Amino acid sequence: MSEKKSLKGYYLTTFLIGFGFFTMGLMDPLYDTYVPIFLGKYIKYESLVGLIMTLDNILAIFLIPIFSTWSDRVDTKIGRRMPFIVTLLPLTAFAFGLIPFAALNSLFALISAIFLLNIFKQASRGPVVALMPDMVPGDLRSEANGVINTMGGIATILGTVLLAQLMNVKINGQNNILAFPVASVFVIIATIILFTCVKEKNSTVDRGSIEKEEKEPIIKSLKAVVGEENKSALRILLSLFCWFIGYQGVVPFVGKYSVVELGVSTGTAGLAAGMVGIAYAIFAMPSGKVAHKLGRKKTIRTCLLALIIILSLVFAQSFILRGAPQKVRLIVFWACLFCFGIFWVSVVTNSFPMLWQMSTYKTVGIYTGLYYFFSQLASIVAPPISGACIDLFGYPALFLFAAFFMLLAFIIMRGVDKGEPEDLEK
Image (cartoon, rainbow, N blue to C red; front, side):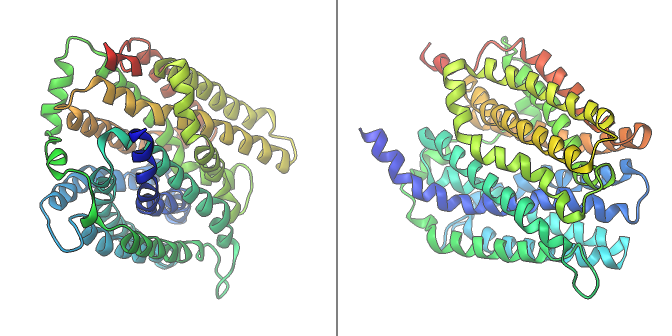
């Protein structure tokens, strides 16, 4: 009975903390969809566009741990995370709103705005992510993560399905502008709600228990995992590296694919990512329940197999339906992406709990750090390679590229024999 009361007691707090993640869920898909289009006006080669799109991930590897650690050591009247959140998120919103205006000016102005945005955004991400475990007890963080992922999915829908349509609205004869400054206003509103409603200083979570969660250097962490007799954790890390390469290789170019291959407007191009976002929001929490019944490894491998099939179908329809009406091709493409979102969220939602299940109280920080390191590293590696595939073979090759790395992840996951919920009881 106490567990049930405890969960209910933290649900509202988790929902409100989710507004921090809401800001990222709103900006990231718009950024991934439209910045490659903006860059494409000045840059001919997609491999170079992909290289520039890795900037946020490169900065993330350095800035997230730096600002997370810095916020650990801060103690103010409004808490240790809030000073960073209320300062950096508004600056992020301002820089985000500048992007389309910079794109109208010059390549130098656009890259400068991109750099400025990513400095503020990645610096704010660490304190935003750290706020939830500060406010929610450890045994409730899995449920809290499901709520937060849903908030991110809702933000993706708002950005890609609704706000993206504003890219078709002309201001002084120019389109491809309005979604970004309007999204910035939503980021400011979300920040105000977060600051007003979440009182960090009133947290009932024991600070001493938080401070015991050790943060280890990545190299030391990797050596510890490689040195383990059972290689399940290493296999999961290699698997997630592969599936994130597949995913992050497609994300920066799916908007341009919609414009170039399917002939849609820039406003409609955002709906491609929107289909994934809708599925993500709907299935984020149910995917955990499915894994509880079927087992996490079985669920992830089944979903990876489904992703391979879906990506192969998207590749095939590029040729099979080439002569079909645009509306038919568009509906088939969106339907495939919606299905992709269903299985993708199941992979993402259940992979981290598998790593957590393999850890001990002292190694939770090690596994958490490695998860983010491998996922961010994949985000750096993928776009230049997938961009080069487009340069060499055309846009449809993008989906074969992703299917190949999903297949590698599927094969590597076969060797995992730990990470199920019942392992805790053994």
